[in-house]
Amino acid sequence: MATALQKMKEIEDEIARTQKNKATAYHLGLLKAKLAKYKRELLIPKTSGAGAGEGFDVSKTGDARVGLIGFPSVGKSTLLNKLTGTFSEVASYEFTTLTCVPGLIYFKGSKIQLLDLPGIIEGAKDGKGRGKQVIAVGRTCNLICVVLDAMKPLDHKRIIERELEGFGIRLNKEPPNITLRKKDKGGLNFSFMMPQSNLDEDSAKGILAEYKIHNADVVFRCDASIDDLIDVIEGNRVYMPGVYVLNKIDQISLEELELLDTIPHYVPISAHLEWNLDGLLEKIWEYLHLIRIYTKPKGQMPDYTAPVVMRQAAPTIQDFCDRIHTSFSRSLKYALVWGASAKHTPQRVGLTHQLCDEDVVQLVKRVGQ
Image (cartoon, rainbow, N blue to C red; front, side, top):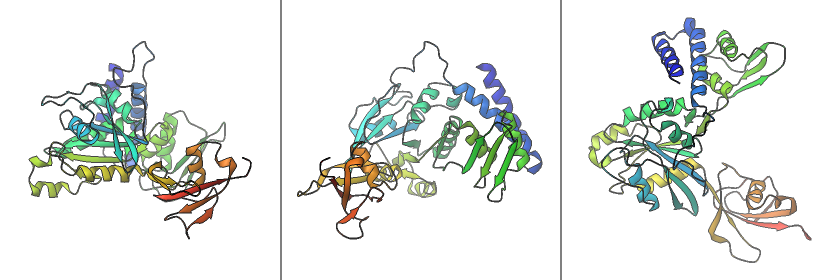
C-alpha cells in the first residue's frame, strides 16, 4: 500500500508541476488515468479476515438516507441529537464519535434516516484514520450533509470535497453524457455531438489506451473534460446531492455570515442554540426530491396520515403500484387522481400518468382479480 501511495504522490506532484494547455493535455490525460487506476486499487477492500469495523454496518431504514460528514468537533453529534432525539456522545474534544450512529427524522409524513459518521481527516481517501470506512458508508446515502465550522468553512469545504472526489463521490453534479461501448474489433470511433473545449481525440485515445481499451465506440454529448472521460471508464462513481451545513454561526458576526452567503447549496445553522433547524430540514427535503402520494379507498376519505413516499422526480402510476406491491399494476383497471397532476377532478388515468407531490390516488382493480 505504501508503494501505491508513493506512486500516487509522485503523479499528483507531476500534475501540479505541469502547465495546463493544449500541448500538455495528452500528457495530463495519461497522468490522471494512471492516478485513477492507483486510487481504485487502493480503495478496493482486501478480502482478508478483517471485518468492516465496529458500528459501520447500519441497515437502511426509512424513505431515504442522509449522512453527516465533516471534520471532528464541528457539531455533527449535536445536530443528530437535536434533529432525531437519538443520543450520540457529545464532548469538547475531537473524535468523540468513533462509530456510525443512526437516527430517524419524521418530517412531512416521511421517515429519513440520519447517520452521524465519525470525523474524517485530510488524507482519508488514502486510508488515514477511519476515512475509508466513513466515506464508504457515505456512498450508500441518498444525500450528503457536509457539516462545516463557521470559523473556517472554506478550508474544510475544499479538503472534504477533495476527499469525497478521491473516493468517487460527486456532489451536486450530473453524470457526464458520454456513451462508451466496447467491442471486439474495429478500433476506436469517436463521435462528438458538440464542440469540445477541454478534450481532443488524441487525449481521449491516450486515456483509453492506458485502460487497454483499443476497440470501442465513444459518443460525447457534452463538453467533456479529461476527468469526465475517466469517470465513465471507471464506472464506479456516485452522483448525489449535497448540502453544506454551516454550523456554529453564533460565533461569527453578521458581516461574516453575509460573506459566506455566496457558498452554493449551503444552510447556516447553530445546532447548539437550535437556530434554523427547520430551514435545514426543508433544504434536506428539497434536495432528496421526495414525493408524497396519499391513498383513497373507495367511498372513504383520503388517508393523509400515512403517505406513500417516493424518491423519483416524476413518478408514474406504475411506480406507485410497484411501491405498494409488484403485482398490483397487472390487475389495475384504472386510477382516479386528485391534485396538481390532474387536469380535472378526479381524472381517470392509466399506468403512464405522472404524479405530483401530495396527489391523492384511488386504484381500481379489474373485476375478479
